[in-house]
Length: 157
Image 1 (tube, rainbow, N blue to C red):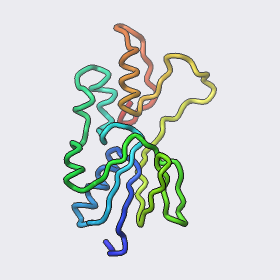
Image 2: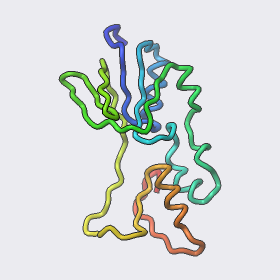
Image 3: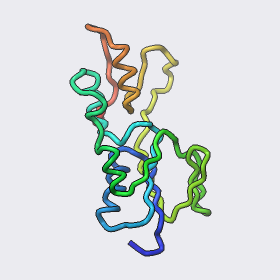
């Protein structure tokens, strides 16, 4: 890593973003390192959302990749609960929660957004599953012997 990189921002506090930040430390980056996520939750594993959370076999605390203390001990600042809303690459400024953050290097690891099918109106009961909050909302609506249709066959679906 070159000496002129003093501050790295990692946007996306899921598996890829968390591992990128951790590996920067493992590889010897000693500058400022910030992991930014729009969710309030610590980085967590997403596949169990549809398996463990919805079935009740696990709870949200068991999905966390690492405790907050591991990020603190690695000097990785966590900015959670605030989405990145604007990027100025010419000035190397990222806006997060109304605050402008400068950076020397930027990693964007935001993942995907669930695709909503066109032509389907907003109907109660049609949900997407991407986050802990999505899983908890769906779980609260599930009823015994209810008919459920899952569209999608990714790691979460």
